[in-house]
Length: 228
Image (cartoon, rainbow, N blue to C red; front, side, top):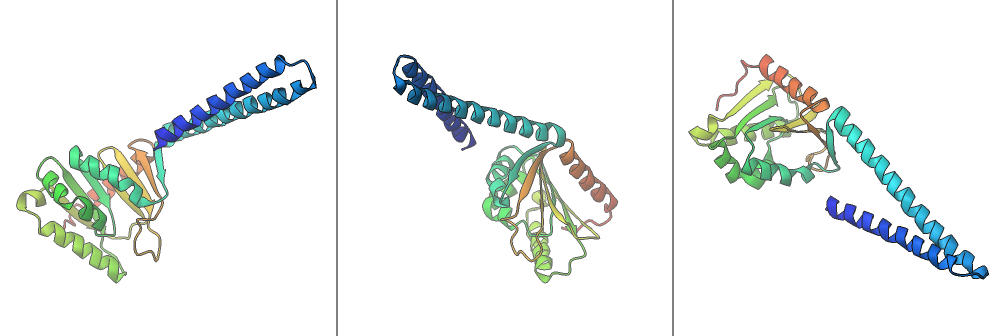
């Protein structure tokens, strides 16, 4: 979709630019006072297209700088927008899935539950961090639901999942699929956070900071394994 919009933008600006040149040529061929009309329109068309190209170039440079400096790859207005790409990657080739969550991974299990089970028996490993101090009854039920789902998997699949609990409540969702890292807030009072803003990072700079944070907590609570 983004590529289509980009092509339409460039095509439209090129049409506008060459239309401006065409109008200038018409103006140059007229010797009467009518000459000013195509000249003015031609200059306006050309100026508009040049400014649009320049603004697009500045935006591209800003985006490139965000990627180089922070590793920021994409911003999703709604969390569910990332699901399809992640799910396809998990089904086809992912080898490592790290998650810090206070929910039950309901959407993941609902969308690709059977495929996820197959991948857990064929190359995929999952590490999940869950909070031990949750005062919200619904989140407590969500965590219990997640643990029960893991316990009901086959022995081969259970061996590929490890859950550790830690003292605290996560302020952000952390979701890593190989080198793709997704981070987003949990909004207070919102039953589902699928409509919450989420950021995608590469595993460098800011994204690396989050992945290292996950590893620190994972190691600090190595004795808090949940029995599956």
